Length: 406
Length: 228
Ligand SMILES: Nc1ncnc2c1ncn2[C@@H]1O[C@H](COP(=O)(O)OP(=O)(O)OP(=O)(O)O)[C@@H](O)[C@H]1O
Ligand SMILES: [Mg+2]
Image 1 (cartoon, rainbow over the protein chains, first blue to last red):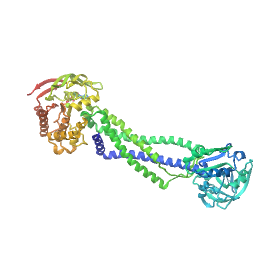
Image 2: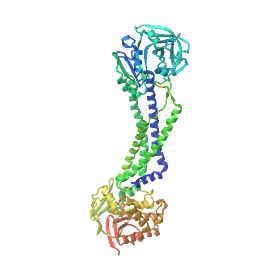
Image 3: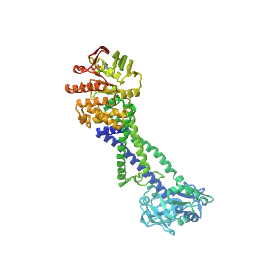
Image 4: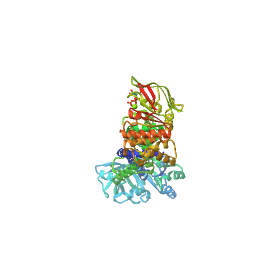
């Protein structure tokens, strides 16, 4: 056995350049897989993270009859006394923040341009609104008692040529189906680096939003952020929905992302296969070549009584060694390329899919899980590619092998 | 005792529609300890016959017995086991494993037969001494002359104490001096250990070493002479 390993090792050493390039093929394959999976992971992760932070939170509590897509402002579709519900939940240990929000829709218009917007009535003091507070790029954040201020996102500001301090007219759908128009002052312009969200979301203080929509002491939802995403299920279970209310988790609210992830994963699986197939064909080729070159050697081994299985073992050991070498090189190469990728990130600008919050810069995120799984994948594929050539070697008739011209 | 017994062996090669009858019904019996030469013109079937005896190939018809065991119907693995245990080979080209040293080449059959390390070492040194290559133990084949390589091959053939050694034109690629040296060694080992040698050759000087000469012609034994 040791002798077989030694022979395999020396055989690789005999043709160093070829062994190196074979290992390199494995390495490049692995590095590509690492990069691909980490970019996808980074993208999916950030899409989900932004969706949670900016839109869905970890958990929301809504009226049982509330329909996300309709943003109804009818009192029976809203949560009554939202501050009280929110403060009860905020008292839980695992909860980072719980705050009422009121959603409405309307139009933002300047002299000659207008833009459809979603209006968020928020409690300016809640920590849940930190991402917006931190995203202020000019002007200032809202205060709770502001009666005529609002925040708009950077893309909307650019589109409508607005700056902090400018006046703008906002038309709002109200609870009883009317549309009310009022002039507001732009207190600040924010960005969350998420084009789709920033371009269409306007913030008002909750009290003002309630007043203008005539939904006094009601909110669309209680938005809850937890200390950790993994706590979601347990917290959701422990909150007993008060009569007439429902508890929703981020998984339910982000079904689009989850579905997209599933579809994307099957496409990505296809890319994985292509990368692996290329690697495998390079390796198979090289190994078959090496079997042919060593026809006579195989004949000698067979003649002195080495069984087919051992001959197969010899060639398989070579592919195992190639696989080990290739995988080690690949890990280094993969880490390096992920690192390079992240130095700059990859700016895609406004490429967000409708309904999904995609950050404008892609960053790769290499997880240990993924690294292990693509490494194993590459390793196994390389060894499998050794199978056929090794089998070929083991089936050679010693007579034929010995006859082979030198 | 009879080491090899060939009964009416024929071997027909078929390439496309062309049939070549390399052997057409050979009967031969080789006793333990013989030093037998197979001679005959090119294409007469010497190599083919050695392959039959060596369990490298199987006859189209007829039977081959090695140590009274019928090897005609053995499968691949059984033939490999047979070769490993009882038959040593020496080829015209110096059939060593290029990545292994002289020492390791001789060690190969011992490893395959599962000998213990100490035992292996002792046996290898003894064999290398017998072929006068003790000082070359750690050289790779490409660092050895043709004669030296062929002596390593002889040592390897003898390593696991086979009852039979088959050599196909062992001196054809050697000059006279080296050819003689190899033959001397083979003859000596034959005398000392009693191992049976069968070698195919064209070389009249080599034939002189033989104690029996079997002449093949067109796949049949034409002459079988005991020379001493
Ligand atoms: N694999 C093969 N396929 C077809 N024909 C073969 C094969 N091997 C040998 N032959 C034919 O069988 C006959 C006997 O060949 P063999 O090699 O046994 O002769 P030989 O006596 O060893 O000749 P030489 O002295 O040239 O080595 C020849 O006609 C040869 O062409
Ligand atoms: Mg021949």
